[in-house]
Amino acid sequence: MGHIKIENLTKIYLNRRSRPRSQFEPDDCTDDNVLVLNDINLEFEEGEMVCILGPSGCGKSTLLRIIAGFEKSTYGKVRVGGKKISGPSAQSIFVFQHSGLLPWMTVAQNVGLGLRFMKDEPEKENKISEYIEMVELEGFESYYPYQLSGGMKRRAELARALAVNPDLLIMDEPFSGLDFLTHMKMREEVVNMHEFLNKTTLVVTHDIDDALIMGDRVVVMSGRPSTIKLIKKMEFSRPRDFERDSDLSRLRSELFLMLGVPYAV
Amino acid sequence: MTMSKKRAIRKQQDSNQEINKVRNRFGLGLLAFMILIVLWEIIARFSGWSVDIFPDPITVIISLGELIADGTLLRHTVASLFRVTAGFYLAIILGIPLGIFLGRLDSMRYFLNPVIQFLRPISPLAWIPLAMLWFGIGDPPAIFLIFLSSFFPLVVSTTVAVTNINRTFFQVASNFNFNSMEMMTKLILPGIMPEVVIALRITVTIAWLVVVAAEMIAVQSGLGYLILDSRNALRMDYVMDAMIVIGLIGLLLDHLMNGIGNRESTRWGTASGY
Image 1 (cartoon, chains in turn green, cyan):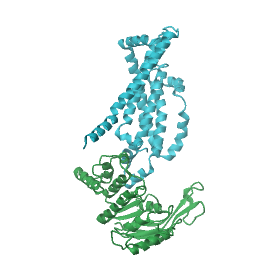
Image 2 (cartoon, rainbow over the protein chains, first blue to last red; image 1 turned 30 degrees about the vertical axis):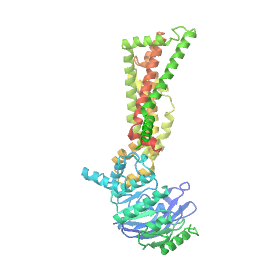
Image 3 (cartoon, chains in turn green, yellow; image 1 turned 60 degrees about the vertical axis):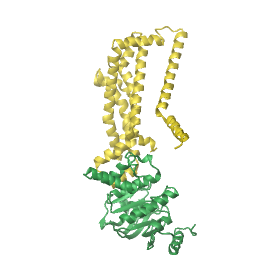
Image 4 (spheres, rainbow over the protein chains, first blue to last red; image 1 turned 90 degrees about the vertical axis):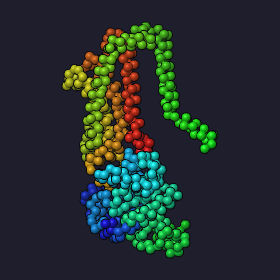
């Protein structure tokens, strides 16, 4: 269900000022058009946690948005669970970089969004509190997003995403803007959640350590036009510590080099 | 918990008391009114103008009592309020849906926006001759003028509010498979509420401004008519009575609208700074 296959994915953004949207072809890449993703081929297994690294502006987010169905590819196919994606759906829930919680709804109402078709009210309530407890937000059910801290908002959004029980969880820089400790804790929570629920999870990040610690598979993309530089299956046991594990540590240096920083600081 | 800690908490609670703040604020506001009345009295006494031209506060209050006692004031106030309510509700019923429609459909917005922006700066008072010709005399032309005064600002504010809704929320909506009904009730309406409430607060004041002017031309009742009639009878004290009531009701309307703006469901807008 959460198996993803991406074939020859290409995305071109048109410079809208120069010409109307309808008259371009995939190969037609002049200065007016920005080739963002160039012939991307990827395949992820069901239940994998995939971390996508790349320099900023390389099209990581675009890739995620295409997989989520928010944007259309210019060329190429994306299949989730064998089915071609036709648009956004509750099967692949997107966790937004900046809060995607609806600010006029309480935490409980937000988490309940994906459960709103459940007929059985008490069971629905139970489910909502179950997911709120999972992210340790009990006691904050009736709070509005603006009353929560940054980390709590992310956790609430995570609970909302998990409550849908999607085939695929897509996270666009889920830890950006969090302070160091909250970042660490959130990362640990996401890893635990993944171990527990085993959902296919795509995480875009610019933090190499996040990718090393979380990923079952790490994908490194090059700068624009983006191609795949590296796909690495991570066979390291958890919890991971790149300071003790020399293989992991070597990989870390490699990744830093690959992303244009010669010395791993 | 130690005593000093408890005391510190209580102290903070006391200083946090919204009620205290409100009471202080209310008191200060009242003080300004009292200063105004004293100034008025001083000018009336020492300017040398006769009571017929510049009535002093006491005269005005006594005549206010007369107007209240014989029911004139109540009758005119109710007439004015009826017209404002009718015109304002009409503007809400037509303006907000049109604003949402224009906010959602880019092509319609590009189509209609220039016309709306062209009609909007034309004062409702400029429509008076046409309104009288089309609707005759009585309530309809006055209601029409009030409708005009509130309709355009409401349409424009609602349109802007809809286009200002964070695009992420529309993606969330499609991600969670909202149907079009849910788009309206769970996304668009709550999303525009804070801005629309502010727009309502501003437009109700405009509507109240216009009703007085409208009543000076086409009708035989209302506070505007009372002013006109009193001027014809050279009763400046009655003119001032009507002005006082107009001011007080304006204050009340603003207060009511502000109350809506402070409700939990719309407060997220200002609180989150969004």
